[in-house]
Amino acid sequence: MRIWCIAIIAASLALLLAAQGGDEPYAPHTPTLIFYLSGNLGPDDQTAISTQIAKLPSAVFVKMNSTRGYVRVRFDSHIVSYHQVAQAIADAGTSLHKRYDPYLVFIVPDYAKAGNAAKVDAIFAGRRLNQRVHVRPLDKSKGEFVIHFLPLQADAGVTGPQGFNGGHLHHPISDPPPRGLGLPSGYAADDDPSFPAPPGPPATHPSP
Image (cartoon, rainbow, N blue to C red; front, side, top):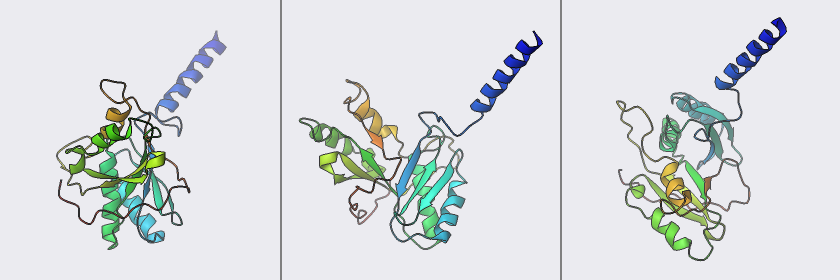
């Protein structure tokens, strides 16, 4: 009986530790995303970006690759939005008198299949979406797109995500009909050297 009780206690402790946050697996709404940046990156950039990211609840700076020009960040998108993470990175650049223009790669693998492109493009053209981000093609044949963020003025009095969040594209594209198009989609979480050089940022960023 004593051994049985010890086994139960040990199992309970293991479940508690897992719930408090081992590295894997993460909840579906806790992505590790790759944000590509413009310009050259060095140690000062990593320090500035990691410092800004640390100010966001739930966000963790994972790594920076100065050769490929990106940072990876893990965060709970039910607590802080994709837009807030991008803005924190942009603010880090401002502190160093740089414009990082952080952007994500969004992929709709079946975009080029018959009948899909026009429907997806209609979602990309949404007025409210374009008050937050600009979606621009990277490689339409592969359904690869770049998401550039417009400046975000976060309201300090508001708790929870603000601005653009992942579901603003994923739900209308990937949810089953009639709510969505039922097409697979996702945000790049790992670097793919096959990505072609992205188009430059829009010339101006109108206020949201």
